[in-house]
Structures are given as C-alpha cells and as structure tokens.
Amino acid sequence: MPEIVGLVMRPFARSQLYQLDIPLELPPAPARPAKLLPLVPHRLTTNLLPLLAAACPTWADFPPPDAAETAFLFRWVGRWPLFGWLAEVNQQPVGFILLQPDLAPYLRRAKGGHNLLWRVLHKSAWAGTLGGVNDN
Image (cartoon, helix red, strand yellow):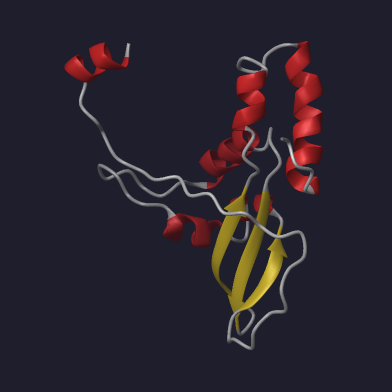
C-alpha cells in the first residue's frame, strides 16, 4: 500500500517526532531567569490561548487556532494522559511544553486498541509508562 500511495500522492508537509526519557525525579533547577511551573493543559484554551497561537506554525495562510478549535484539540488529545510545563519570566508566560507517554507498543500489542484487551492494556500502559515500570 505505501508504494501505491507514493505513486499517486505527494507529501503536504514534513514533521518530526522526538522522544525523550524523563527521569522520575527532577534534577534541581538551575538559577535561570525562567521559572518552570506545572501546566494544566486546558489553560491553553483560555488565558494561555495567545501563547498557543504564537507556537502554532502557519500553513497555507491558515489562522492560528481559536478557543473552539483548541478546545476540540484537547478533547481529542485528552483521551490519553497529557502533562505540561509552563515557562514564566517575571510572572509572564513565555513558553510551554506538552508531554504524553509513548503508548505505541501497547497499541500494537492490542492490535489497534479498540477491544476489551486494549482497555486492560491501556490501564497498565499508564501505570507502566508513567510509573517507571520496565515493560521488557
């Protein structure tokens, strides 16, 4: 199938996915002008919406997402665990990062994840990925 799709379609855009192992305990924060605070991701749909809009790339003259689009995005993404950090300088938000555990191995094991087995593995995926339990 990929070969057939490659013959008749062209890429629209390219993106990259990065993976980073996060330690269970945070190292002591260095003395920097920015302060990192835990972020409730849904704040990006309300008072932090301008920060999210500034972080979104503009493709084909699409405007940045508005509150309704951002709320839809978080309803869709919020089915999985979602965590965030907010960077502040002088009590002003200047950046953020959103993180989700990599649940792909669990989805592959459950053959896509839309059955009873997936629901069981899904719960263990949260515990294993977020609790530091080794899957091997």
